[in-house]
Length: 235
Image (cartoon, rainbow, N blue to C red; front, side, top):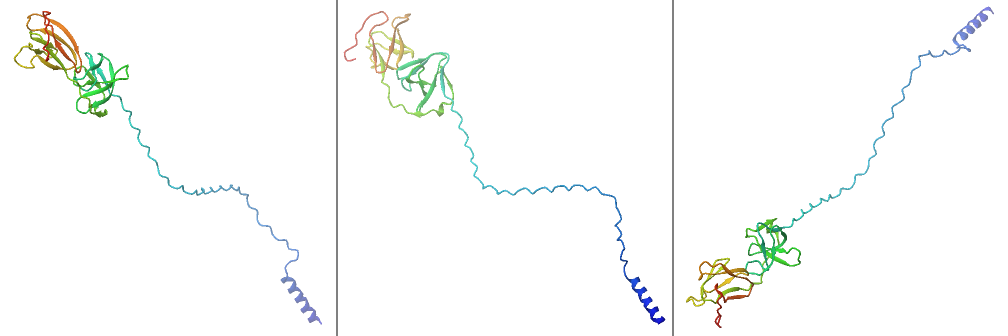
C-alpha cells in the first residue's frame, strides 16, 4: 500500500515539472531608441517617349537677284547732241546740256552708240560714247542690243560760185564751180551747223552760217563779196 502511494507521488511530481506554467507572462522585447525616418526621395518619372516626326524636305530659298542699277549718260565739259539714229549722219533731235543726264535704254550692236530716253520727253534718241563730252555711269554692255536698220539720208554742200570756199567744222575745201576736177566743189556732210569763209578774199572771216539736215543739198550761191551766182541747171 505504501509503495503504491510513493509511486503515485513521484509520477505526479514528474508531470508537474514537465508542464509549462499556466500563468507565465511572456517577456516584452527590449526597448530601443527611436530612429528618425528620412522621407524617401521621389524617383524621377521617365520622360515620355514621343514618336519621331517624319523627315521633311528643307526648302532652300533662292537668293534674291541684285537690283539692276540704271545706266546713265551725262554731258560733261560741253553739250552733247542727241541723234535720231546711231551715227553723226542722222539728224539731231535734241541736245543734252552740259551737266544734264539721261537714262540709257539700249545700245547699237555695230557701234558705241547708246539709245537714251530724251529728258522731259517721251521720245528717244542716240548719243555717242566716243566723244569727250560723254560721261557714262554703269555697265553699258548689259543694255539690250539691236541693230538700227533705218539708214540715214545723205546731205551735201555744193559751191556754185567762182570763188573757193572753206567750210567748217571739218576744214572742207570747196573749189569753184568751174574747176576742171569734177565734184571738187561738192562734199557730203553730216547734218549740223556749218560756217563759210571765202578763200579767194584773203583776210575775210566767216560770212555765212547754215544748218543742214538729212537729205538736203545746200547750194552756195553767194561768195564773200556778196556776189550772186546761179547754179547750172544740171546741178
